[in-house]
Image 1 (cartoon, rainbow, N blue to C red):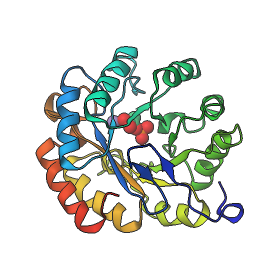
Image 2: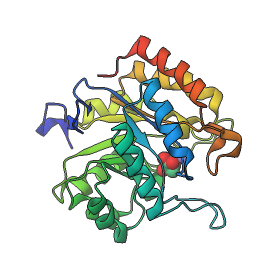
Image 3: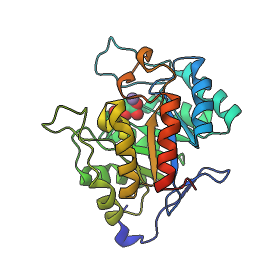
Length: 263
Ligand code: PEP
Ligand code: MN
């Protein structure tokens, strides 16, 4: 992952002109969890707002075992149906080494490794044995070097298609869900050739802070943004407090385009 040994930026190509890295910028949007038929409705609105990739969790890493755990394989079906209709590549979290083969067989475009699994070394090695692009999130209290070493676990198995994601870290501050470490964006660009994604939704935890921090992440040089969008945040099965409505997302995308064009 070290830029010293590989000066040129890594560019990940999802086909259809959708690329991340090396100057190419995309917005990944969608609900925290896949919940059912509202996914397609949300996907259409995300696309018309200008998002080019669709996110949604089918396997959810929840703090409480009694909270909604995700739809599992049915969630992957719904994501793939939404992809078939909209053409948007799919980003979804894989939590378990036993599911990696399923994600590859189903043709998931990007396997997300969540913050809670950022040092699950067996899972990192398993996705490293595939050629599916990986969106690797920074651990909840992970350092930049730990994030880079997690990327090495994937790359050392042969998969170089890794994107790093700053999603906020745990600090003493409690007014926001996490502390968005925007320093990580230029620091990662200096240290590594891998694309850097920023997630202002999990980083802030509140809808009202998502737009300003999305804009800040663009200004800091992020190669992509991942933003949670829900058609009815008050009723969302997870992370409703940080979701943008489709109308809010329209406005945020307009303001993002003033800083950074989606190319
Ligand atoms: C998510 O993207 O919905 C998620 C669980 O993110 P994180 O792993 O960053 O908390
Ligand atoms: Mn979420």
